[in-house]
Image 1: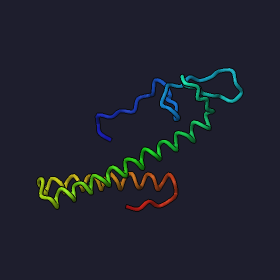
Image 2: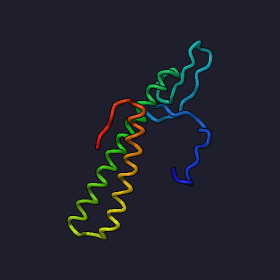
Image 3: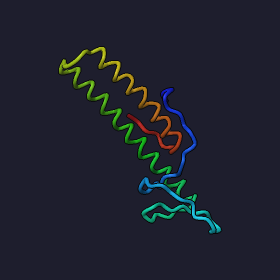
Image 4: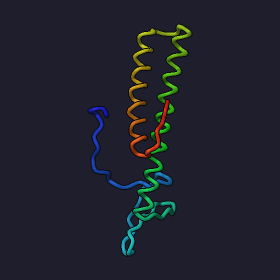
Length: 114
């Protein structure tokens, strides 16, 4: 993460279904959260839905980094831009993809290959 990114305490939780703000529903034996369009989730259901959204976001990032490497290869083949610059960008994408792959593998227990 860049030095510019700071993980402060969120001002609210967001609905893993739609991204809307959640409000805790008080008074139930099992704590629940509701968003402004009507999604109601228990804390356990939110944890599961968040995990699914995190995995989806990470796999999307992994796919984009793989496409970035391929774009660099194609641009290099076409001689469109500085080869050293493309190699640097491709190497950075590869390093970032490896980090995401390792994270996904550690979370899912299923090996992911590129």
